[in-house]
Length: 218
Image (cartoon, rainbow, N blue to C red; front, side, top):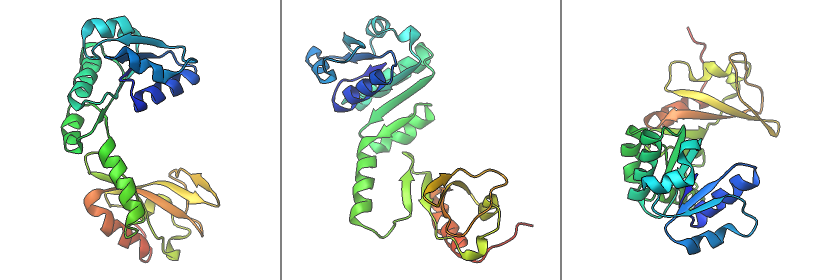
């Protein structure tokens, strides 16, 4: 179920529909449904996305996932909470424009996508190449996905040894044109380009550690 049939909501609904999912779209304006195109096979419901009757008409009781992607932060979070708390929808996500609210919503158990924060971070990375290793930061600012320069002395060591006793984990390794998701037995090879998930405040420490001589965990 998708609440909001703007550019994001309509594209999301079309993609899900083309993948074979059963999709219902809610929007206050009937004219918004024109964005779905003539090939859209899902249901369209005009109404307020957090209104109980509207949600029931859209099939909320059978929904396995709910995306609140309207143009209003308050409407999105209210609708997401209703879907999660009143109708026990398993997968719920809300789009927000104010990234300062992300931490608040996270504590409510509602995953959010902060559009402005994500877009500005992507643009900044293109404009300011001073921090090329940072690939992603979560909405609360607590965790960072980043690349590291790996010292040659780490070759032959287990991937999990790289972040032993540090607030970080090797999420994946770019290797020979492909991607490896490390297991407990994975070993670093020459040419590896590791990507780590690290606590924000420890990124510099972890990067320096990886660029230094290998240390064998005791």
